[in-house]
Image (cartoon, rainbow, N blue to C red; front, side, top):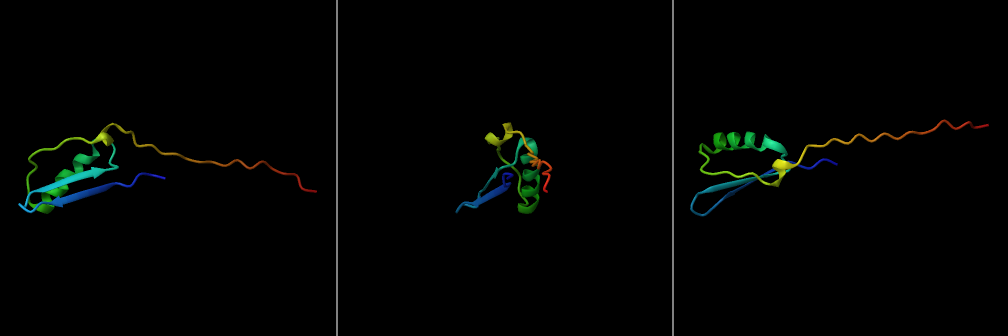
Length: 72
């Protein structure tokens, strides 16, 4: 099962916006910053990486080997 990529956006009472990505591995989270800036017509004031920056994207292929059975 692959991790789900999410972006959580919070608008505070004073109008400031914060966002957090989860499940986005490596520097791919930076792509979301540009999209949010465009959608919100805003400029990023500060940003920091989460622990997901150090996680490698993994893919697991499962193969089941079924031996031939001689049925008489």
